[in-house]
Amino acid sequence: MFEKSWMESWQKLVNTNGPMSWIGKHFTTNLLFGFGETEYVIEFYKGKIANIESEFTPETCYQLAIKGPAVSWEKFCQKTPPPMYNDIWAMAHPLHGRLTLEGDQMVLWQNMRALCWALDRMREI
Image (cartoon, rainbow, N blue to C red; front, side):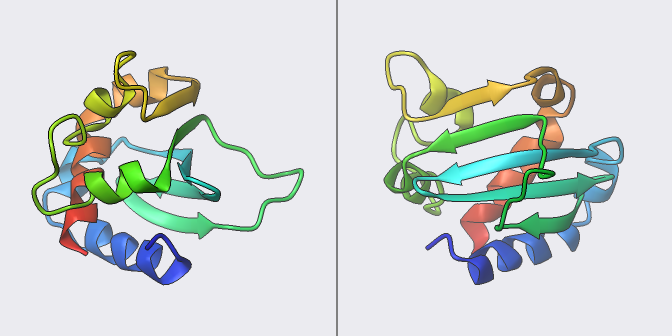
């Protein structure tokens, strides 16, 4: 499910979403998304996904990693996700533990609305 073409479809949905242009106007960062064993570094620039990197080098960097099992992300991406998979907070809750946040969480808090809006586009693929 989380192959490169799927990620490119998500990129297109995020980049063509009207509200994202003003919700994410200050959302510029690099995030690592881990879907089980598959990982991508996503470059957000002013609310748009500028680049998706799947091959890492020693120079690859990111501010925050959001990782979880692929099966958890698959549930999150359902049109109507089951309880505890409806947002990253439920998935990261200590009692649930399906998602980890590693790195500079300030970027998450500063851009929460834009990130959550972008993540919701995953349910449209």
